[in-house]
Image 1 (cartoon, rainbow, N blue to C red):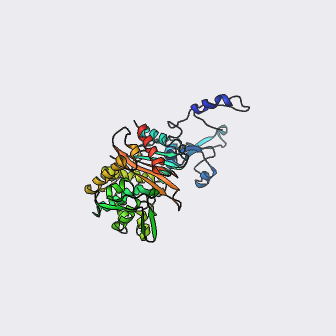
Image 2: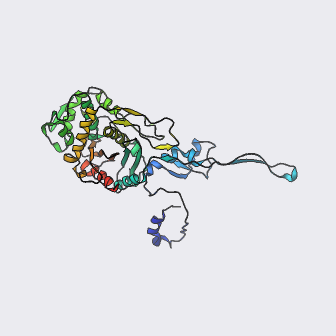
Image 3: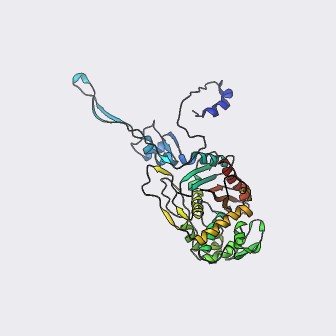
Length: 413
């Protein structure tokens, strides 16, 4: 049996209607607005499996349909409700009529309410459409931490990479490194930080994309042009745990408490000289999820980390928390540097999108020893909306992730 939405069936009806043995039955189901709408996040409802029954003895019958994955799986008990039961005994007496000795009435399921915004979610899904590899776009409201979109690809995704991926952040992590050195007063946005084509640390050589060099330029230019070697050279200024301290101040490694699986990141600490140099521009052992980076970006944009929220009914067991206020003399120049990425740096394609100024950071994350193999990233914000884009094996951010960000922002208007 195959279930199709009406619009999908109508596209192929003329080709299949006369096939021998085919029977088409029309029925009504509760469906999301589109096939791909937050698909991996919402999960699905399908027939119970033998594995489900074996894991939960006595809970299901072979005819049950239950939630699998995402919110449908996490909140299945609430959403499905409880079946009624009756125990009837057949015995002699009174013409052998059966006697009911126990009964419980069925209880209807209860809905859940999320922070997802249909307009923003549709824009996120549309932005990823057509990408053949695993991809994700997460959008978070700056003002309250609400997750308003969580899209996955291809075709809505079967894995919620938006929340659960554990991947290197690449140059998007320069946002965290820059916050760390600014917090420590080691550099200012206008401090001269050399950007050579190559830089050696701990017996390892680091290079910039396509071997570019900028020479002796202000730190904000290093950031806007995404100079790896400048950040590798600044690694000693962060010390063994300065990168982790900066990341934790904007929510990385925090307990998100969303009610379903979500990865908040794991930041490289300590390590060799080479590892610390690589970590300073997102190529060390640090791994993150798109949700983690969207939440961290929202913290920089607003000046304070707010725990992301997704399910508001039932109310979370613990109220969402907020982090400490970030230092104004650190986040103010960092925001200006992230704006320069769009006005004069690696994301100028976003200069003319509608809806107001865009700020952010591009990222290309190599995942093996071949520089040609890389994931594409974008993190940024516009107005009250922070978002992260991840494209597995997307290559350069200029062709892999920035176009996704542009499609997303244009679709919002």
